Length: 125
Image 1 (cartoon, rainbow, N blue to C red):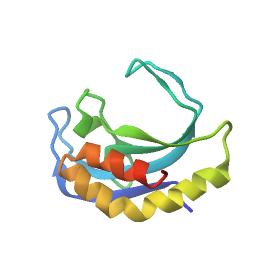
Image 2 (tube, rainbow, N blue to C red):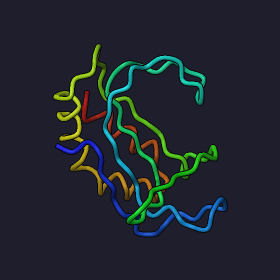
Image 3 (cartoon, rainbow, N blue to C red):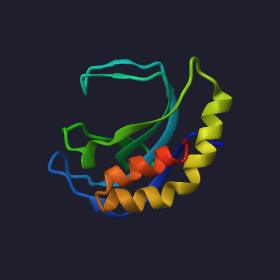
Image 4 (cartoon, rainbow, N blue to C red):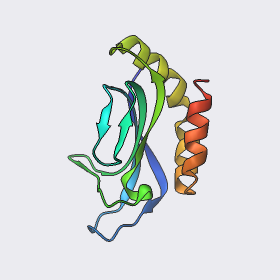
């Protein structure tokens, strides 16, 4: 199962930082060792995360921005604790998340970020 997927926005997100628009949402399931998060100032857990990042993607390159706006920058959702990296566990998590990609993008475009977090966490309760 692929752990990364790109889904097209119906309406690109316009930003004031460059001329290109954010036209796709990158949905990635990966392992993080956890520890101190310098961006958020919190301690992240060790385990599997779903990372949602709006990007501008073309054939030869991909770009994203960091501006402090959650809608433009993206975020990650803790899915499952793991004591060490296991590709099998990452793949199992991806099998649950990737079928929800169209629903995730629809909610992202509507700005319903808390609903996305709740939906993803509900899959692993």
